[in-house]
Length: 359
Ligand code: NAD
Ligand code: DAU
Image (cartoon, rainbow, N blue to C red; front, side, top):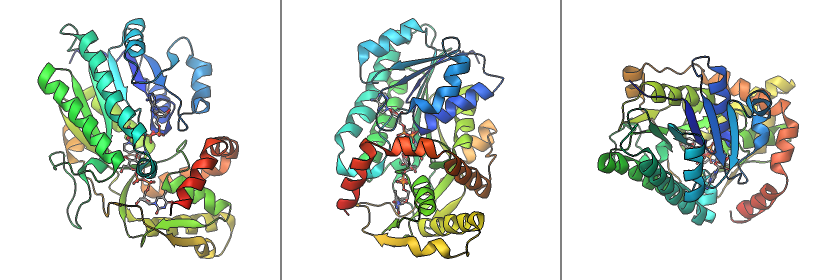
């Protein structure tokens, strides 16, 4: 394979998974290239996540450019300036509850933004160099909708998105696939289950619950708490994407999952018990904080992913057991109070009020 993987444009690199991926790549000795992190710095983008990378590699192998993926001229300039041969599209509005309260940004970034990146790649990569280039699109298992007990999502499962977020991701996946079929653009797509780990914005279930337990605040569980999610430690998502970049077949979709399915209420109980153990409290001490609140509209009942294709064809494997990943995550949030306080100040406070008043 002639794939270059030298000048990699990462969109959304200041977010949760993007910043973990940049750390992951600089730790991997097989990566010798440069990373150009293109991020608009929305409420979810935080350059503090990459301070260490900036110090070591800034101006040499790491470059940050503040830009909107929807800005054609700016993205085209960056493609030329850095001679981009690989693009990984992490940039997105990523939170389902926000998409219910206001879908517009999701349409603009997730659909139109991705379309814009595809247009730049199609025009600038052209026919020459197509074998060396790759456009990898990071997507979600939510595009498949909800799955019955005993069944799971395969790469060929029909799309049935149920929230504005998942509909916008589904739409972007279709566009990416179509650019391969129609224009021959070298693309791969990955659809991954729920991630958790360091630097995740505390609006998402696991960091929200950890922080609320630590502060002894209410633990809001939506509906009856029996919705099922599959959990993957973020570093394993990063290794899966790197596998696809190195070995993935052009035009293909790969499912990524943790094979760790849990009902939300089971997960919240586990977090309560783990933190109680750390704090030397009675096993059930924090469970009194659990409160069942109004359900999320259109709440998907169950996600379950089959990732055999990635395992069998590309030789990927998760490295983290769920218990180990959770221990790492609890430690990280306990030890990084400064980071937590900074991301929770300002705009996030307003969002919390709006979100909970709407329930
Ligand atoms: P995140 O919300 O933490 O980060 C998103 C990043 O994108 C932020 O840094 C933000 O500033 C940036 N961004 C948003 N709009 C932009 C724009 N118009 N131009 C440039 N940058 C912009 O999200 P995340 O959880 O890290 O998710 C990353 C990707 O992975 C998303 O595409 C998401 O759909 C997908 N995904 C997430 C999960 C998960 O569990 N978090 C699971 C599967 C797939
Ligand atoms: O499946 C992959 C998706 O996982 C990603 O594509 C999304 O970007 C990511 O946000 C995540 O979506 P979810 O909606 O599954 O994640 P969230 O953390 O918001 O919620 C997880 C489950 O927990 C879901 O069933 C809703 C429930 N929940 C969530 C919150 C924030 C609660 O019960 N209480 C809460 O306070």
